[in-house]
Image 1 (spheres, rainbow, N blue to C red):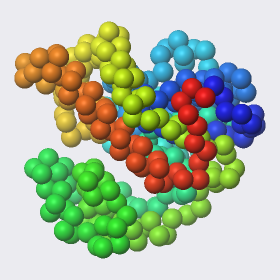
Image 2 (image 1 turned 90 degrees about the vertical axis):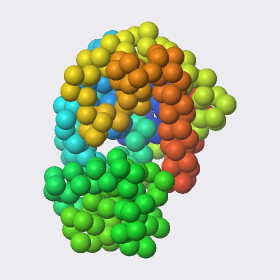
Image 3 (image 1 turned 120 degrees about the horizontal axis):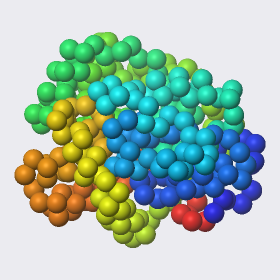
Image 4 (image 1 turned 90 degrees about the horizontal axis):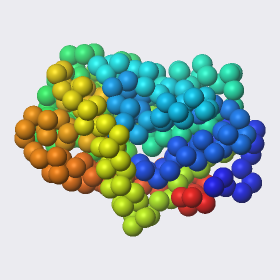
Length: 290
């Protein structure tokens, strides 16, 4: 249900944890008020995961304009900066309903993004090896106190990113962030909504959705990625991908893969809820379905 009083002209941003109904709400708003639906999910940009990333269906995309879905090659390390540049190019075309669970995209859009130089491939390779070898603690020891105070130290990918920036530039991530330019879309220029999905409501939806993904071909999608599977690729972080690949390699049963994937999804949703509550306190909270 569209929230009462929602502007029919201003851009709309919709955040929320996985499986909370963000895409359905975005479609309802776009159908009523017009505009294009723009993806703000870091996995839904990849061409190789349509079912497993819960991308809009071809039927949904035929009904209403959708942008930035499934347009990136699996081996490309797509960045927040690239996403912002693509959104900027879309802005003159139509009113936007920007929807997704990647909080970093949405905060960069409304708060600005530090213009950090690209990380050289050799630094990323070294960081990937450290992370995969359980070296997050070692990376944390190298970071400056200000950066440590800002990042999620329990998130290996956030730790790796901060370490890469330090290695590549000689400056802490927090120092680059303090030089952030003005945002592309100011918070007060848009309708900013965050779905407040309680755990007890969301958990069964997560379980049902993964079962639906299996029925719709998630295992076959994983099989298509099996030959050149590389866990270090950003596209390989689709939740459930590693678990289904392990099953296809004979390392687990399908039931075990399903259980592991749903547990990972619940954990991811918990991290999302924590992030939104911390970083989106001034966004309008809405209950799922109302």
